[in-house]
Structure formats: C-alpha cells, structure tokens
Length: 104
Image (cartoon, rainbow, N blue to C red):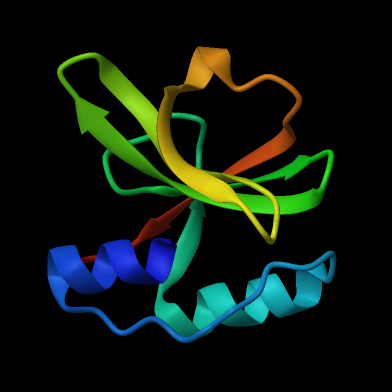
C-alpha cells in the first residue's frame, strides 16, 4: 500500500520491503530511501510503523477534512481492505514510530 501510494502521488519507486520483526532491516530501508525518524508531531504523508497483534504494521498519514489519520490495510493474507482511521481510533497498536522523508 505504501509503495503504491507514493508511486501514484509522487512517481516514487520505493523498494519492495516486507516489514518483519528485524529492526536492522527497517533501519537499512529507511536510510536507503531517505526516511528519517520524526517526532510525535505527525504530518501529511509521514509513514507510521507500529506493532499490532499480527506483528509489525505500516501506514501513511493522510490529511482529510476530518483531520490527520492513518491510511493502512487491515485483514489477513486472504481477505483485507484499505481504511483511513483517525489516530485516536487505532486500538490494539503500540510502539508507534513516525518516519518522514526529507523531501518529496
């Protein structure tokens, strides 16, 4: 979803990366693509990584008329959907980290 979003919006070809539990792989990916950890002050088009019941998870911060929320995929490998959720409704996720690209 993240790769598709940035390809459509900005023509960026982000490398394929499956978020696993290996933090070292995540750090290599972010350094190679220009993403840096940001503070808790989320902005439009920041990435947010987190841990959920099914493991590591990622989404894109998107600004709408309702405010900032997270565009992400929910479901399982067989059936899922893409949703936008206000951050205050993200239940069951922890260890949220915000990542920002230096320039798009």
